[in-house]
Image (cartoon, rainbow, N blue to C red; front, side):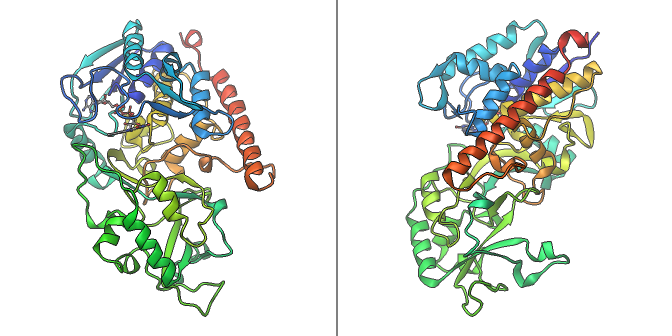
Length: 454
Ligand SMILES: Cc1cc2nc3c(=O)[nH]c(=O)nc-3n(C[C@H](O)[C@H](O)[C@H](O)COP(=O)(O)OP(=O)(O)OC[C@H]3O[C@@H](n4cnc5c(N)ncnc54)[C@H](O)[C@@H]3O)c2cc1C
C-alpha cells in the first residue's frame, strides 16, 4: 500500500500540496487546527481561507511574475488557482475572488477527493517518522513554533518579518551611487565593494526626514503587536526618536569616499546590499518600515541615485513565522536535519497567497514522487516556481533572509540583449515569461503521471 503523506496546515500551501500529491495517487491526511484552535486572522474552519485581501494580484502572465505563477499553476492543474478562476470577481487586470465561496469550494474539492482526509487537531511536535509537510503559515501555533525552534535553533526561526525595500539593480543611477564597503573592509575585491552607496547632502537629508515623519503609516492588525527590538526598528520610528538618529545609525556617512565627488563629505549615506547571488536585487540596509506602499515609493525616490528606482518589493513589518530556508532546507524543500519533513508556503520565507500556494504545489509533488519512488526532474530555475524555490533554498543571502514575493529580479538574466527603457522592459519581461512557460511545460511533461507511478 502507498504510504500516506501528512500535511500540517490546510491553508494556501497545505491545500495545494494535498491536491497535487493526491492527484499523483498518494493518500493524504491534512492536519488542521482550525476551527478548534483559532488564529487572530482566520475567520472560518475552511481550507484555503484568504485572511485579508481577496486578491491574487496581477493575472498578466506576459508582463508580471505573479501572473506567470498563475499561468504555471494552471498548467500544473493547481486547485487553488483553478478555484480562484471559478470564483473570479471583476477587478481589471487583477485576479480577485469571492472569498467565502472560494474557500468553501477548495474545502469541498479536497474532502470529495477519495485519497484525502482531514484530522482537525493542533500538532505541537515534530514527527519522528513518516512523510510530512509543514505548511502552517505566518500564524503557526505557538507549540509547533517552539518545536521548530528547538530543532532549528531559535535564531533560524523568526516570528516577525522586518522587510527592507528591495530595488532592481538596473534601475539605480550609478552616476550618483558607487560600490564600496565602509573603510574598504574585506579580504576580496568583491567584499570591499559589497555595498552600494547613495550620498545625501544636508538639505536632502532634512527633506528626507520631514518626508519620513509625514508619511502615511500602516497600523498593526489586532493581535499583531510587534515586539520591536532595537535592531530592527522601522526607520520612521528611528526618525521620530530624533532627526539625527538615522545619521548616526544606518545612514552614517563614515568610512566612505564618493568617487563622483571625492572632495565632498556626504552628510548621510544610504547603503544598499546585494540581496541575491545573481546580483539583480539590492535591499536598502536597515530600512524596514511600516509606511504605506505609495508613501514608500515617494520617500525612497528622494534618495540620490534612486530617483527612478523600481522596487521588486516594498518594506514591511508583520507578524510572520518563517524559517531561514537557505540554511535549513535542501533543494527538495526537506529539512536537512530531518529529511522526512518538508516545509511549504509562507513559513519557508515566501510571501503572499500565490507564492505560498505555488510552494505547496512543489512540495506536494516532491513528497509524492519520493513516496512513489519515482524521479521528479529538477524544477527548472527559469520558471517562476523554479526561480522562487531556488531563491529560498539557496539563492538568497542567508544572513539577511526575509520573506520574498515572486519578481523578475529572481530570474536568471536573459542571454538576449534587449534595449533599455520602458519598451525594452516590456520586451524583456515577455522573453522571461516565454522562456519560463517553455521550460515549465517541458517539466510538467516529464513529471511522473499517476498512471506511470502505479
Ligand atoms: C494578518 C495577515 C494578513 C495577510 N494578508 C495578505 C494579503 O492580503 N494578501 C496576501 O497575498 N497574503 C497575505 N498574508 C500572507 C498570507 O497569510 C499568506 O500569503 C498565505 O495565507 C500563507 O499561506 P500558507 O498556506 O503558508 O499559510 P495559511 O494560509 O495561514 O495556512 C496555514 C494553516 O495552518 C494552520 N495551523 C497553524 N499552526 C498549526 C498547527 N500547529 N497544527 C495544525 N494546523 C496549524 C492554520 O490554522 C492555517 O489554516 C497575510 C498574512 C497575515 C498574517
